[in-house]
Length: 438
Ligand SMILES: *Cc1c(COP(=O)(O)O)cnc(C)c1O
Image 1: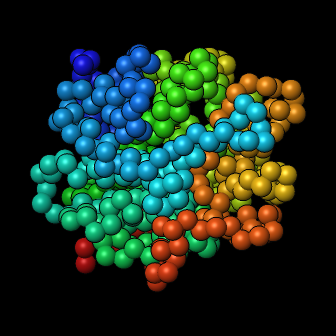
Image 2 (image 1 turned 30 degrees about the vertical axis):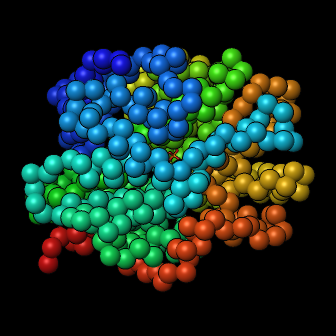
């Protein structure tokens, strides 16, 4: 077996102090408000992976150096087995040569967020806490994260989950999913946008006075416990492709907060066979404008049909800059493009009509970029990342495809439960008062 040097983690905003991975996972955000990153990314040998291994096996091999020397290192294989209970198949599209879908929606809540949420829950469950009081996991969600985190922590002892989502800006089925858990899970519908929810969560996590009264942690994509496991499906797909075809695989990733795409980029930085990476954004063009040469200009999000990507200030941008400190090199290594709602609708309708393939609105942004590439004569091999099942967004998808979309069994079961959420003003103080014990 490989012996790995222990890796320590530091904030994107300072060189020290460094902490072991379990401390970075338990904290979520670094004390200075930055995001945790490894001191350096390790290098992995593609030959170190078992060609017949499962996704969980690939994850355990991939993540071993990130956990080397940590209290959780001995538990890593068990954590991966617990988190990766479903597959993330790379499915070739019969009608499209050299095109495959990386389907990330076969988990309990039908979106890729299940991977990170389940891995984080499996880690936190094993970490000793000095504090005997329940831990409150705060999660800001544009729809899918909240349900995945709720499902991963539902009925877990000594953990409460508080979900904040923008009222009216998630799909009806997403809202139902968020409100249907009960028990240790509470849903708050915030009179604001996703960026407000995210700001409120960050403010609460940085509020030492509040933390002293109610221990808090986050489960947003800012947590390394969610980001790192997301590398697994890219590594698994790219290694499988490389063994079969001898070439790296290129990916088009629907992008909002940059957590999913950053995982893909890190896999490439580790030395595994990932080729080009393209970011597909919706009308929220902060990243496309930056990649076109403008200064980075975070802003308020606008609502689009791909609501899980309605982000104007992508929280993982700091990690992207840490990965590629030189802006010119960053713009060389990556591209980002904006896809508007009209193109999302057209893409969903066109692929359903011509090929019988049905995509969720987020997946459709990536498929649209591929359609543009093909129209320009590109004949490389691309994997389009399918981030959610179309049935979660039936109110967008069904009018375009003209027929009902089959609902996966786990989603169908959630829809039969009753659901409720409490209203909350979009202010940091409103969340603070709600969280404080009365
Ligand atoms: C969260 C989400 C995205 C965006 O992922 P990021 O990691 O925030 O970039 C895309 N599609 C779906 C369906 C999502 O739930």
